[in-house]
Amino acid sequence: MANLKAIRKRIGSVKSTQKITRAMKMVAGARLAKAQDRIVALRPYAVKSGEVLGEVAAGSTSGDAAAPDHPLLAQRPEKSVLIVVVTSDRGLCGPFNTNINRTAERAWKEHVGEGRDVQIATIGRKGRDYFRRRNAPIFHVFEGVWGKLDIDQARAVSAHILKPFLAREVDSIYLAYNEFKSAMSQEVVLESMLPVARAVEEAKRLAADAGSEERLQEEFIFEPGKRALLERLVPMYIEITILRALYESMASELGARMTAMDAATKNASEMIDSLTLQYNRARQAAITTELMEIIGGAEALND
Amino acid sequence: MASADQRISLEIVTPDGVALSESVDELTAPSVEGEFGVLADHRPLLAALKTGIVTFKKGGEETRVAVGAGFVEIKDNHAWVLTNQFAQKKDIDAVETRLDLKEADQAIDAFEGEPHDPAFHELVAREVWAAARLELYGDPPPPTVRSHDLEGEAAEFVVHVDDDDDASKSA
Image (cartoon, rainbow over all chains, first blue to last red; front, side):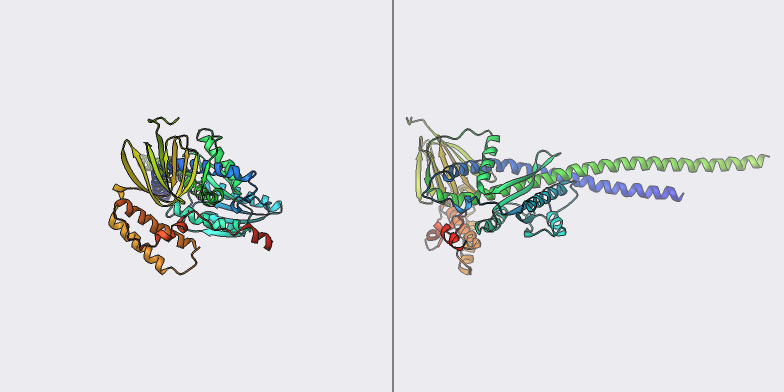
């Protein structure tokens, strides 16, 4: 009988766990729809600003000897690297954070192997914990980004990571985040953000993806001049890149959590089924034993 | 070339999506070097915008909207305005905006730090944005508000960079 009671208790606890995982799945699903909308809404802005940057930067990198290349466009030999790792604050979202942290760690080790100086900036608690445990050289920990996710957060991050680049302490900046593919799948992306020449390529790719028309050959009038425009455009482009990465990561996290919680809910169902089977078997066995005892007793009386 | 019925398709794009999409006859926008107007078949143009009012005409009817600092690209009778902020007259709450302006103004007065501090720029940007919205509302703030002589400074995206020369010296 003690066995029966233990199984019953076990079933109860699995059921209540299942309730939680099911609720988490629902919540993630509801928030995912919103997060996806935000990505879609940001797209035209991101694509257009990339195009605009491409148009201004295109002329600037070639020729134009009179104006030296802008510090924000500078391409220096890559000696020191900053990797910005975007993870979530909370767990229970499957391999989401592990994937991103592993990719970033691999990049870190590779750069170090090639004799570069590497620093790491983290967004999200999971990345912070991971790299702190591994004694990584941490440049900055951005806290509370996920609490109120908007353009101001992206601007704060962008301002902070541009400083060492302009001060020539860092020669290139990479961004590691999960790109949202669908609710079921995310892809880890390690994107080069600065120097911007590579980012411009990236922007062109994005523009091509979005199917925007080929740019004109016609000469643009630049107001107020290329250099001044670039001074505004590059930080803005970095901001948008970060904002996009944050949005993508947010949606990916929710998608990953939904998938993970869905799997957990299913596993709980299976567990409940097998426990119920066990429970019934035990119950039957108990009944059978009891019957045998009664019959045995009755037969003993008949004799 | 320019035919009378040629129109410009104007799109105002913010990080929250396309805020406005219209086919217009002409538009005026506040670039950092002053207001400029655009008619159909304009030469390709890329300009930095400051916070202010974008005006466009459509069939003789004039509409005004407030935009934050950003960029405008004119190409092939397309005008894209990229900005972080956008407001239409009907969305503006005058009382709230006035309070916002006042708060920003006081914060600027109380600000102790370098004028290059990003936090200071943020405040100025906030003040200028509030002033632009009030102007659109038809209740412009008094000229004593400092926003106007700081507007050049207020462009949110400007990063101040040391010139190449002194870096090469120190290197």
